[in-house]
Image (tube, rainbow, N blue to C red):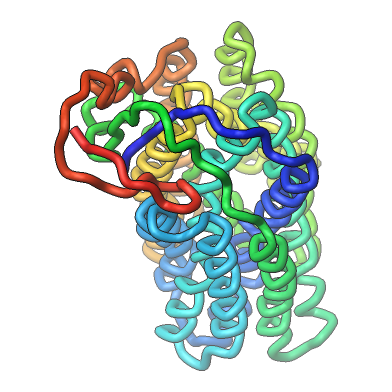
Length: 432
């Protein structure tokens, strides 16, 4: 993957508006496929005839897909328009959502889930760089916009899936999972209309390879922080509703409370990016988020059916770490292309780390019959998140930690040619 930072002609406002709408609609779909599973997890277990450990696989598979499929983003963007890649990914997402809803076996359900994760996986890694490329002076605003849309989509999926299933009756969980394909199809349309972004023919290119980022301590710190906050999020998404149901709460009430958690993320995702761009506020924000997580999990552990909404709200506030990390991806890299590389490596590696969390909860629940293991995982993760995040909040750039990343080919050296990821149309540059 290579990077260039040449000047380019101004983009018409109508094009920027179209791109902004496409980005926000994509954000609306990033979590629907994931959040719709937890509220009807018991119905999925019964309908497919699977165990609690298998349910753990269902909750962790999206995280693994985000990791594996996310790495395909830059190579695809190097050969095709970003808009076309995301349109195809969202179409595949819609087909996967319909496929897993109709699945008659556990294997087919997993296959449909993997396909449904395509839109979310590619959107995760491509949106940060698209924001920096199309809106270089409005990064905080656009991250806030699509982060808010993502929270809204997640809230809708978490809060209404169980209600839809209950209203339909037997087998209603299938319809409740399939309905989210409509949103994915709507998001396909604007990406097909987005024109190719002009790329200047002048200017010296600089080489950026994702593998080279692994020599950066900042990259590894970002991977750990993203992985730990994702572990918290996917345990909440995948297991909180089932935990509350096992404590005696009804399925619809548990789903609504998890939906409340996602609703809280809407203002959080809107407010955090503009605050997180201020260096002096980053560590206070981090400490606050970790305290919210610890307080929320403590409440659920000690009094799960007493003032449950308070504990859920606290967890929602704690998940502000996600919006903060998204913002830091743009702040810790100097160019759109190095941002794309950092985003891909951070999210790919982070999701691999996070995948262990929901799976471990399912295995421990199946072997012990309880949730003690879940609370050990989330409390330990919160402490580690604070320690790793403290270093990420120090102002520095991944470009400066990797030899040649910032300067690239500025010295005039030559080498093999590769296509620039994300350039529309693709351009060929010299690689160091």
